[in-house]
Amino acid sequence: MLCEVARHGSFSGAAVSLGYTQPAISRQIATLEAEVGAMLVRRVPKGAVLTDAGRLLVDRGESILARLEEAETELQALAGVRGGRLRLASFASAAASIIPPAIARFRERHPAVELSIVMLDPAYSLPQLVAGELDVALSHDAELGASAAPGAIEVVHLFDDPMYVAMPAGHPLADAPELDLASFATEPWMLATTRTCPDSRLFLRACHAAGFEPRIAFQHDDYSAMLGFVAAGVGVALIPDMAARGMRDDVVVRALDRPPPSRPILVVLPAGYRSPAAAAMLDILREIGEEWVAERPGLTANTASASR
Image (cartoon, rainbow, N blue to C red; front, side):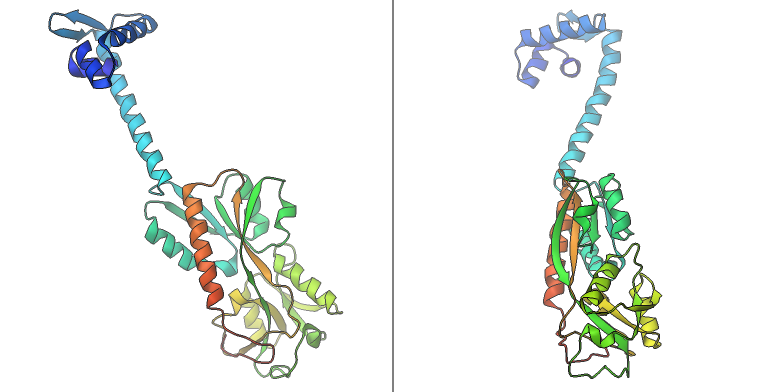
């Protein structure tokens, strides 16, 4: 009110501007003077004149009001996904498949949002998400809920990622009419790191269900490196569809007659609050996920592919 009195040079002008009565403006200025302990406005025949204390307070007040207006504008931008930031974590095979088109689509629709991406396995991204260091995380851990405190996270299922067996070109089983996991019981296997990658737990359970303990020849969380060893004849591997698309020519990929469990592809968010930017990314990931599943190449158990 003091700033409006200064702007209009009178109590009546301030009252009209703010939609109050003139006595209401006078009472508020009197209350402010009592709080400050100094006279702020002198009444003169042509209106009102600020004292030195009044000018000092108006200068500071104008700056405060400008900052408040900036804050309101920024809050409105956040609500409309026209600003803010989004911190996203993805595991490696998602980062090589569905995340690039999701990022491109997000930046096209929401260019003002500051977007940052890190590659982390769920074992590392979940603690950071709960601690508030991430806004969204991609996971492929079916046991994710058991590793977080109750009510700490929200998990959204995108789709299931089937697992296939990869073997070197020319392998004796490459053209076998029937194929299951037990067919490879005596083979050396390439395996993801058991300590951090949930795919390894899925694989080991599938082998045990098939009645054998796999012989592990090589462990690595990079499917590209793993497939290089497969191509070199070091062993065979169970790989997800995300890693199988665009396969090298010296590797054969087969679906199994009794397929192992698919791994779930999940979006994880903090429980209780979803920023507009996080909600927008979730919508885009759902779109990309539907497109990814729709474009999945048909791969039957008795059809080998050397170019997936």
